[in-house]
Image (cartoon, rainbow, N blue to C red; front, side):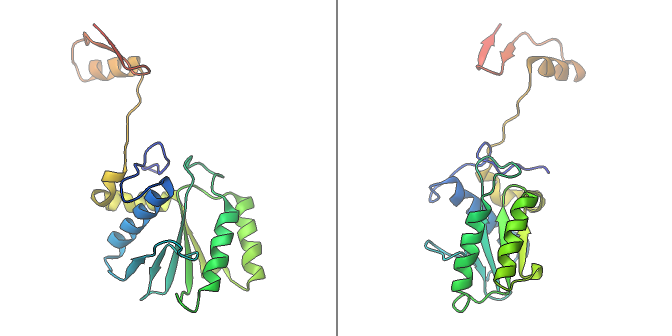
Length: 187
């Protein structure tokens, strides 16, 4: 996976006011670019369990994120609450596929909770799809220009790695030493 969609690397840009809003905007933008369709609608709060809706394909998208962006950090109970809300408005926003857009991997335990809930609502695995971080990274790879303003990637290297890179590139030993941990520069 090339892109990391955690709070360490995602910028919140107005009109978004939170990390969750920024994640939703990234999902919406990538979906627009991936599909090339204009039938994708970003719903404003209260969205009733559906953040993004595609009327032509009858797909409802729910964007859930974790600022940490690591496996197990997605709250499955919030996903289930959103799905409950989406089921309640299925007559208004007709959908055949509910797509959960997450910036981190879901654990097996979390997935089991979702399956148990789905079974109680007579939903099958074909009714629900989960797009995890690797799927978003692949879309970002293809459409990076559409979301690059939301990404704040920094390179962390040690002093020895920096020296080695210069030497490997056949530059003379740098006369400026950089301490990358407290941003002090020594001559």
